[in-house]
Image (cartoon, rainbow, N blue to C red):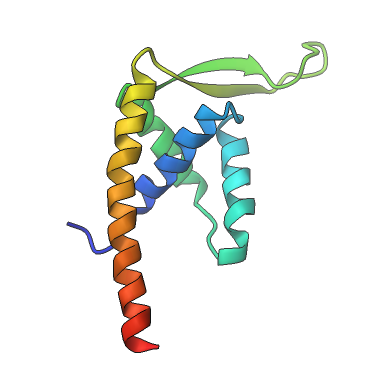
Length: 119
């Protein structure tokens, strides 16, 4: 058992939640996470976001579709990759999040004990 939760597991939980909320594509997810965690001094590496998304696809939780970024094909040439749940992806995602929640609760216990014991 790891001492604290792995960064990739942490990121995957957020990515799953973003897909549940129909929020964006890979780069948008990265920007949202960086904005949300900036106050804590954490900036998830771009490579970790894409590795985590790739793993979620490999695990059969997500699949990709491509689409032009804007609504006007004459102007908007940038293609983006959107992520969606597979047929049984939502169930797999719920199970994964439940497992990570157990790890997060354990980590919180360790951190709270360390603060209580030492400060």
